[in-house]
Amino acid sequence: MMPGIFTQQQQSPNLGEANMAHLMALSQQGNPTLSHGALIEQATSQAAMQEMAQNQNIEVPKVNFYPSRHPDPRKARKQDIKQAYRLLRPTKRHFLNPWRLFFQRKYRYAKDTGTCVVDGCDCAELIKIENLYAKICDEDTGKSLWEMYWQNPITEEPEAFVARENVTSGRKLRGTYCPEHLHLYHLLVKWEKEQEKMDEANPRRLRDRVKQGVSMVTVPVASVVKKDPTPPMLEKYEPFFAQLQKDANKTDGITIIHHANQLTGLNDVTMVVFDLRIFQHELEMSNTPTAAFQALMEQQMNANTQLQQPSPGDE
Ligand SMILES: [Zn+2]
Image 1 (cartoon, protein in one colour):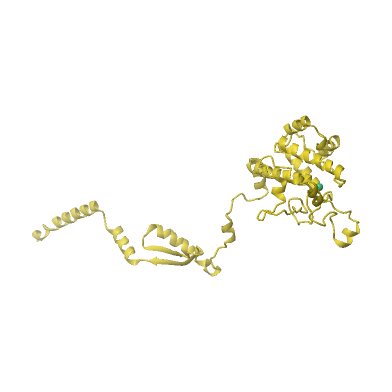
Image 2 (image 1 turned 180 degrees about the vertical axis):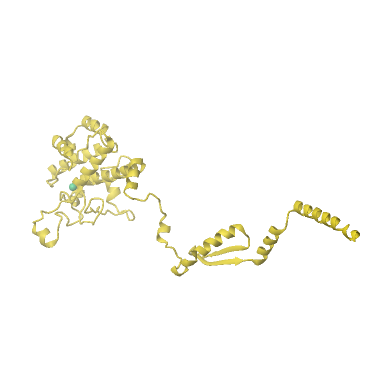
């Protein structure tokens, strides 16, 4: 746990109570992805939830998210992410609680998808009074939480957002997030994306990963799935084929023909052609002297015959 966050939270307990100048100042420091607009949204939702709680007598606990003011924007974002995770984790029952002990019901508010898993706020009831989800929008896309998380993307029917055991991963629970928690969840997802982008661009991080033995070679999925189709029995021919491949570069007498299957793309038939005629022709060509050499040979032959010719006269 970060002691820094703790003390900050105690100093400034709630964004809903912060004024505009304060929010503006906060947006200028720390996490660069947490902009002024996002802060206002978070503050407004915090304030709106409180107001509704007072007016409607619905129990709405405060979400105490308070942005990190770390001077290093990367560290600030990291702290914000950590804090968001801590605030969004579903509330567990005490480990001695009989529900948890005997019925494996670890989470306190995992009874239906209309209830916030963190604070047990009755979101279904909340929507009936005022749909705060529709009022909180992403400042970049302009889409509301309602559109992004509470609608079936195909049918566009309202459908509760389902919270997960480890916030962004893990088993799905029977529970959701109230507008305030959902907004924080939305910000968390955005920060994590941003963080991922930064990590990938950071060469030092790359080196760390190589040190950890993580292969940085991107392997296309298809080649991972497809195993080497060569049957083990044929493995002993590998050197033979290597030799063939080498010699095929030197002579036209060796041809390796692959017949690929059009459907699978695999080599179904491999044929090796040794063409004796080409071998012989190539051999002949290499033995045949060049024209200049032939002329020289001819001269030599003539000289020999001239030398030999007088000899009969000597007899
Ligand atoms: Zn909540």
